Length: 370
Image 1 (cartoon, rainbow, N blue to C red):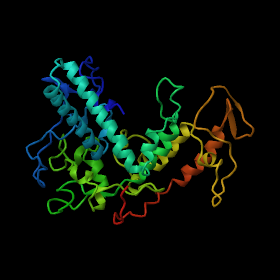
Image 2 (image 1 turned 90 degrees about the vertical axis):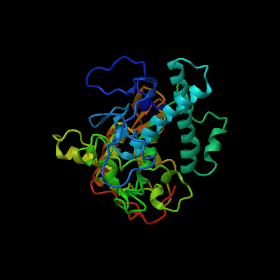
Image 3 (image 1 turned 45 degrees about the vertical axis):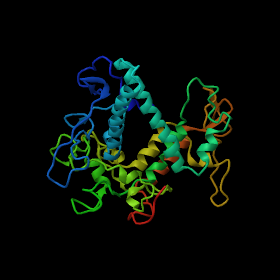
Image 4 (image 1 turned 90 degrees about the horizontal axis):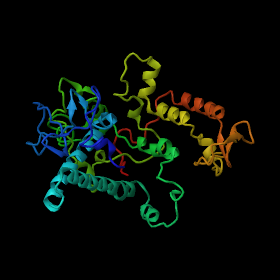
C-alpha cells in the first residue's frame, strides 16, 4: 500500500551491489523516477500521444529495473506500474509549481511520494473496494467506531494470511481470455488484431521476451487506459469477469513462470498451474482447510465432515494436543494439525490435477462486469 515496488530504496540510497536490480532515478533530477522508451515498429499505428515514447518500464537489457520483478510478468500490471511512475513525476512538477517553499530535492521528492501514495490508497478504498463490494460496505467499515481489525492491541496493522493467501484470491476468477487493449489489438480491429489475448499479455513483457528481438516494449503495445476506466462502456472485454467460484481458464497454463528450464517437468507444470500453486501455498503456510473453516456454520445443503474448530488469530505460541487426533491447541484456539491438513490438501491437489473448470463466460460473450 506504500508503493515500495515503485520507489525501492529511494533516490539517495548508496549504489547497489553489482548484478542487483535497483529502482533508477533520473540523473538530471533525482526527485523523479526514470522511465523506459518504446521500440518503434512498423506494425499497426502509434498509440496517442504519438510523440510520447516514454511508455515502458526502465530496463537493462530486457530486465525491468523496478522494486518487484513480478510487476513485469504481464503487460497490464507493467503498464499500471508505469502509470504510477509517470504520476509521481507529474506530482514532482506540481509540487514545484504550487509549493515553492519546498526547495530541496529531498523535500520535493518526499512530498511527491506522499501525494502519489495517498492517491493510490484513495483509489484502492474509494474506487476498487467500492466496486467489488456490496453498496454501503466501505462506508460501513470506515464509519464503524469498533476496533474491527484489533488494531488497538498491535503496534502496526497486519494482514491475516487467511485473507492474503486465500480469500483475496477471488481475483483469479476475474481474468479474461481476451481484452480490448488498444487500437492495434482491439477495436476497431483493422490495424493488427481484433483483440489482445491473455497469452500476449504475458509475452509482451521483459520476462516474456517481447515475443521478438525488441529490448523494450514495441511501440504498438502501450495501454489505452481510457478503454478500461469508462464505467459506462457497453463493451464486455473492457471489464473484468464477474466474481465466481471458478478459476479463470487461462490460469491453468500460465507463461513466464519458469525461470530455470532445468527444473523437473512436474515442478514446471506446478508453476504454470495457479490452482495447484494456491493450494500448495496455503498448505505450506498452515492455513486451515475449507472443511475446518465451514464447520461452525455448515450449510444444510452441503454437510461438512467433522474437523477441529479454527480461528483466524493465533492467540498463543504454546501449543498442545487438542481434543482430537486432528487438532492441536494454541492457547484457547484449535487448529487443524498438519497431518490432517496434509491429507485434505493432497486430495485437493489431486483434484486440481486436471484443468480448472472455466467460468461460464469462457467465450467472453456474457456480461462479466464487477
